[in-house]
Image 1 (tube, helix red, strand yellow):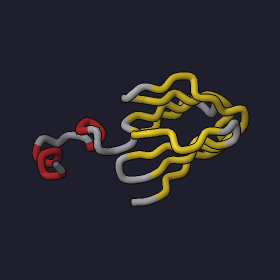
Image 2 (spheres, one colour):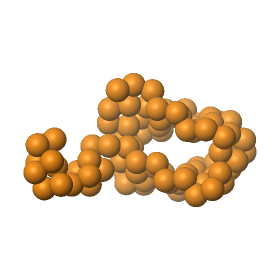
Image 3 (cartoon, one colour):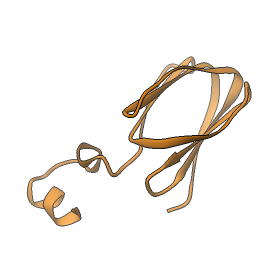
Image 4 (cartoon, rainbow, N blue to C red):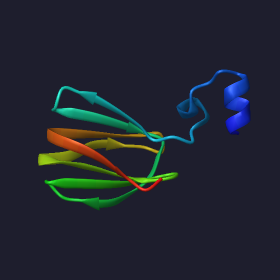
Length: 85
């Protein structure tokens, strides 16, 4: 797949093999291409991506919406951390 995306000049997220995080200020994060929710508290939300884990830390965190395509997180976000390769 890497060769296909390179030949067509496609970003890896278009093929769905990269977790994408869009931050809107520090109040909202939209996570795309994740696989599952591993842990969920008001201070930490841990998501499993295809090749890594993603941790969103903050206060008053809540998941507003989650579908197969994306997960919308609200609260006061202080950091986003990737774990793994």
